[in-house]
Image 1: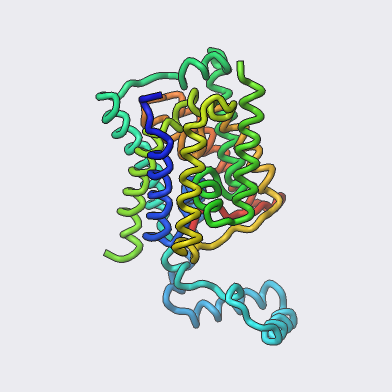
Image 2: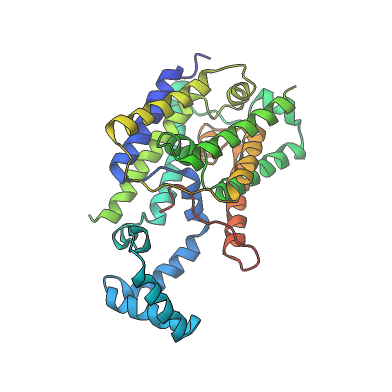
Length: 209
Length: 142
């Protein structure tokens, strides 16, 4: 359809955004990750509040951590764990990445990212069509497959639930696993992308009128 | 302005770019997405795969994105992806596309968005609960 960009513009645009995100943030861009931060907003704010006294005070933090560990597991178990750790070669993964933790992206930035996607889409629509046009469905084909009435909207809610729950369980979606993980040859991202694309193909072939 | 508040600016810019790009691509058009899934039209699939190839070349030959954390397989990877794929085929949306559909004026996407938010919330409740232990890291969450 001439209304949309050709495939190479889509490739160039999406890869430019992906690579720009890597360069500027040194992070993978993941829409489902932003959703995760929205739904655990309250949880995060409680955690941030309890972390406040320890910011930039690593000694106080380690003491509190040690005390909590002893309360939870007992003095003997904690001592045994310390000895065990000393005997093992320390790897980077064992250490808390304090710097990265401190530079965590604020939840508000994730919220703005999601809202800006709506705005960016609306601006692009106004640019191509001249004005906004509102519809109450997802087009004639979707209507033809899912019918009308209340079941049409229930099927969208059900689909949304599977998308929301599924992407959190899978640890990523089309952007995180697909556009960001596959290019970096992350095995789990390649697997996840093959599974969600394969499933979407199977279901689409099944419901195709 | 410290590093943390800069994120508000850059994440907004990336949201605008991503929303605009996906809107112009046709990924928010159910008919286009459905035709991709039944192999009737290869434009979107080629667009997606081309983007992956370009980024992969930048990763392999320019070393971009080397420092980014890599996720590990867990028991939720396959079943979660199957649920997502089913939802995508039903609504033509992934977690970002539902927002793009709404931005285009497709108001039915509000129902999908309600489902996405509710599904993610339910997952979070289950993941932090004591009865069922699930993995809790998602791409781009940090």
